[in-house]
Amino acid sequence: MAVTTLDPQTALVVIDLQKGILSLPTAHPTGPIVEQACALLEAFRRHRLPVVLVNVAGGAPGRTEQPRHTGGFPADWADLVPELNQQPEDHLVTKHTWGAFTNTDLEQYLKSKGVTQVVIAGVATSIGVESTARYAYELGFNVTLAVDAMTDLNADAHHNAITRMFPRLGETGTTREIIDLLDKTHA
Image (cartoon, rainbow, N blue to C red; front, side, top):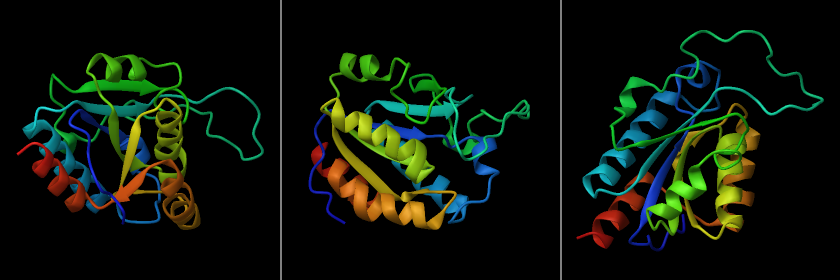
């Protein structure tokens, strides 16, 4: 793990910790992933830093080789899990693509708050998390990825994202390392 610093204006972006996604089979149990995300949420809220909760409520159009679910989803599919304890000051982004920046107000929101860095956690590592991290990096944000606060539907995809892609997009660290840096930065 190589997380070295957090900018004073860092935001937390939590990807797709919602009932429908967490009901899918994942490479790692989702209970501990949600617990780590909640620890990050608590720390960011304690330091009065921006928190962004992201859910997905659809998919991008276009053909793919791999079949996509096109039937009706349960009514609560996109509902965030209650453990996240959504607060009025949290910014909610509902996306219809893999990444949280495409066709949403996320970039404008972060810039309006003076954010220069994002910490990203959530599911799925190689889909929503990686897509959001790539776009954040391309937009010039410093990116940190909380690797123990994420999982994927596929263990190989998770491993590839963490070991090969994330070091090219930013820094990686554990929830504890990130919280310790956050507490140090905002002491």
